[in-house]
Picture: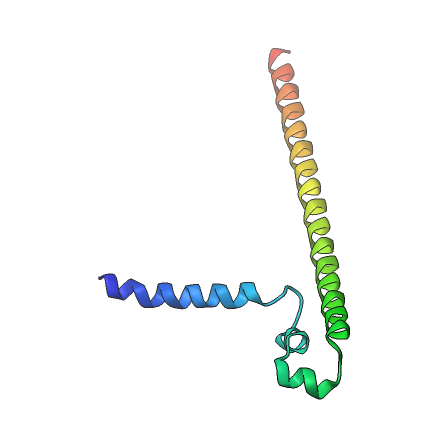
Length: 104
């Protein structure tokens, strides 16, 4: 029984690690472009300073991308909370009206 759960758990762990290591909103090619091995550094002729600048630009873009998604998520949560509060208030008003009608 123990072996039966080890393989799926290991595959799930591998999938989670793979997904979490790829930057959000980027393709694997874009990610690879910024993380080349030493031979590729020599071939493209970029200095380490230029490479660092490119990597920082990439990280800045990713940060902006994630920030935008975070702001959208916050707005959705606020709208949902407002909608829930409004619905709750309407239900309370309906209950009060029904109670008033029953007393009349």
